[in-house]
Image (cartoon, rainbow, N blue to C red; front, side, top):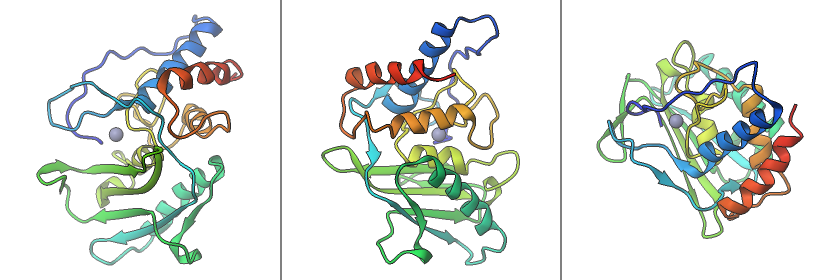
Length: 223
Ligand SMILES: [Zn+2]
């Protein structure tokens, strides 16, 4: 959720760090992105944590809705991003036009610069998901204003990261989940985060401590 100013110390990857430090940083970035919850109120940086890993077990069937009903070329921008996620994830990401199955991810494109979410919060990019008692994500929604679909403030892939289970943000690595690195599309580190969250060695509902031990093993294999 791109609301408010998140004041966090940014630690950049630098050339002189050891391989072990780089691996530790990846594990910490995964921890930030997966088990921290993004601040949800303007100006508040209260810390919230998820205790368990959430992710999809079923295929994602997505719909796209433009508030003004006119999509034009913008639909293709969204499909392109969905293809990227489909290629990385072990589950399928399918447009509802190509599936008979029920929609479980809605992508809503608003016309105005800002919109209201959760009653009275102003946002220009938003994502949320709901999970069952086993922490399996069953439904998600992404809402963005049309001006943020493309260009300097593009946030679609950032919000899609939230929608697949990354509740938090991380600024330790060049990630689309960072506010500070200015990435507009998935990086190789985002690919690592996604592949790790959806590794067969992890499961929805897994506790944080247990998860991070396995993430450490996976990070060691990362070049
Ligand atoms: Zn966010």
